[in-house]
Length: 399
Image 1 (cartoon, one colour):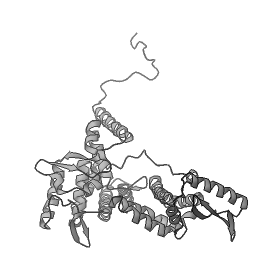
Image 2 (cartoon, one colour; image 1 turned 180 degrees about the horizontal axis):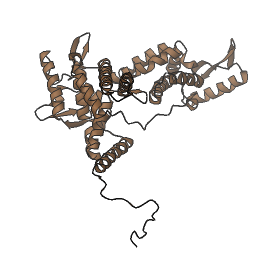
Image 3 (cartoon, rainbow, N blue to C red; image 1 turned 90 degrees about the horizontal axis):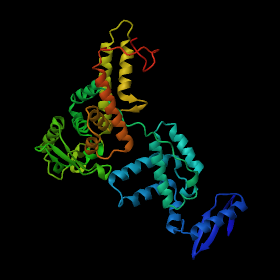
């Protein structure tokens, strides 16, 4: 049956001995009767029949989010839980105390519009909607709006930022100037020397590193294909040697200890991996950008050149590209790009970098061909002049 409470209609139906009392969110009686019939049909088909699920859906969004994260703890990794907690943060601010049951497709569209105004990427926004979808599925209310929720287009064409040789030199010269950057300095050297992701480095243990054989094994990665053994070049060995020296000074270095241990309030815990070096990385990038700006200003000696303008442009181009900041993850793309430019095969790139999508393989194949073409163009010195543009191919050049 349907009944009216205030301006809105509700249903009160019993299916297979279970009573369902739910808001139908309509002020029209005929629509309410149709919605009740549809809802009873869904319950009979096993869609949303969970009483526990319906109780979850009646919670305010913030309370539902807390319970959702608590229930996820035994089933996902700490990093995944932290990621979902971060993704839920803007959702909490937008939906606040609204009941999960009352969220409609138009509300989600409004959330998407508000988030686009902040300049976030389509991928990040889709990840936020994905967490919301999991919560609403938990509450058995997603199927009602699923067809009306549209995801954003994700930019899959951008592989990553690659620094120029001069900017790369500036970044690492700057990193070597302060002791407080030592950890992120060594991490950056390892990333650009091995193709490793940040998560792979953070979960690296000393038992995975063999400085004598000059190799390290990646056992925690984004995918199963990312588990691999990587040979170490001289830069990578030097970075790990510095980290090893620090570990032994602190009394760490056991095989089970992390190469990048957790550090909170200046207290190290080698049994837990470091969660982030974002603050140090951003500080380093800002300082390197300032150094790049100073170099550009000093070189602006041509007549009419404006040193201040040159400084600002160099600094901006160092930190940003197409509005996106230089990320630590871009160092992985730096390494793969340089390998491709040096002629490494697709098989070698995949063996070193782990999982690579078809788009990435095609991108780096193009990088490799471009490098070859530029190298050969350097051999050109005007040894022969081509035919004139008005001369037809195949015609006799000499009568």
